[in-house]
Length: 365
Image 1 (tube, rainbow, N blue to C red):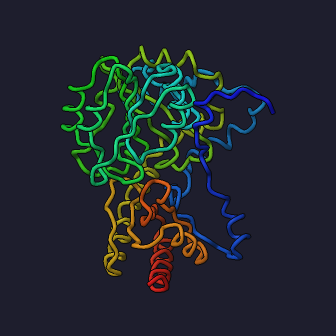
Image 2: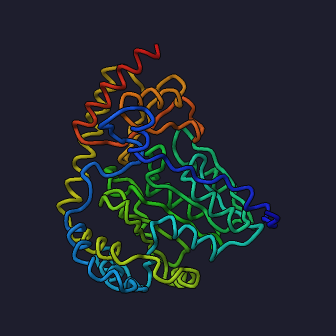
């Protein structure tokens, strides 16, 4: 083809999704594998959400509500914000794209940590803007360094809280000091995909800032704590003026009908949410204890996942674990060539992980 592709599009490294479990099992000749690589909910999906989606199946010939009226109203009531401050997305990923399209143009800059969620860089580059990477400091977000990188070209600062892939947090006081250094022409995006799992009372809750007079947008998702990753539904909370800009670039019907029905019901399923959070916290402690027994270094987390130092090639360790029927995530592409990341599973899954981990570790020694 003789297409004239912009250089900034050529600069994007495509997101590489993992293979389906069924294909991995076929390739490796294994059966009954467990997946602890994608930070998914070990309990499955909210039962109330499943029932609501089943009930909505007979209306799939109709377009979804383009405004997401009922879901927006329910979110606004639950979060204590004005409905005009809520923007729905096909996952929170889509809202990242809306923000870059609405606020950035070629030559602008967006500050983000390194490593971080890959979609920040992809969306920034897709509009011809430039990512500015700030290394983590002992696995924590270095807000002082980020503030020092702000220039007249800076339009957005992306923050993870809890951070992916490290599970560390930003404290309330740290963020308040940081905002004193952020000029008003810069939007601050706080990605809180894992906020439901954070137990530290000092952890920043971005909602305290999202409806104020500063350009702060908080992103949240139903994928993790509510177990609805497969229907792709997330949302942003931000000042109404910023939300109105996103609606200018938002695609019509971007939140599908099943997703809206499932998310509405999930918000009423406090029992499922409580069970999920309790299980994750208990199973993280179980995994920590098991790794300590093996003498393995790990990094405690405020999310539903954590990092493990395998003290060997992470890609090779991933392959060895896969042959044991356990899918983990290598952190080599994130700049940690000897770390893997796992999410908390059920007790049975975590026991299988520890047994497989011990076998692989002994073999690699």
